[in-house]
Length: 304
Image (tube, rainbow, N blue to C red):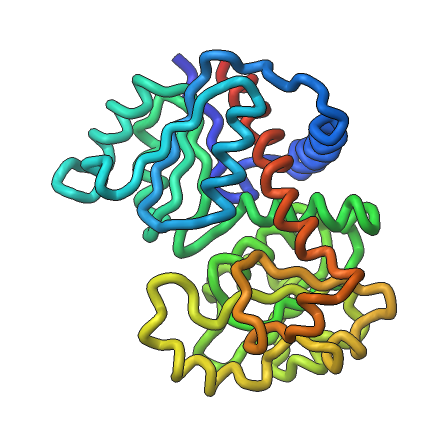
């Protein structure tokens, strides 16, 4: 039996496959709003393994699987043996024998890699400490809907060199855009990722300089889940890294700004931008639903 296709990072799909996926997501969004029947996967089961809690991830995957005609099974840390004595490899063999596709939101990226290596069904990375590729699908879909192809554009990442930043580095490679990362010293993304993509990614410490002439500005919380004890110290380091009207004034006149949410209003992004009439942040959030439905469809078709 051939190994199933997984989605652990954006690099698991070719640029052509990613472009096709976004077009399919846009079409599925249109169909959903037109109340068209999308129940093509009756009887299929999505196992949703959550070691990290989330609002958008659970709602989007669960609603999406139901809209596709299947069932989504929510598994919290209290509902599985994953990480409580049973090896990840054993859990993968058992769970994947009973469901058709698995989504995991966990901590170490090695956990999802080990799970996928022993799974007989497709595995989706719904967030690890290193990557958040599903959010990038939603972000790239939002850009495509609003402005067209990303190729040749300039993007500024303002803030922590976290899992979202890592996925934006991968996106720069897969969608062919330039990425400038603005972060304080000591909060850089992984050095190997920077080295591998130095032809299109670089660091600029001054956020105002980083934002100049950009088409898209992106940010995230300064302290991610699991870093709450560092919140006060991080606020001091990141005090000058807020995405606000002054910073956006340095970007191109038609530039967009995005945030994966939840946002700490008044910290990494201003209240004014969050509440602006022309913000695409809420569309970006909704697109998690449509992009993930297209992803589920592609993976189930590939494994059939």
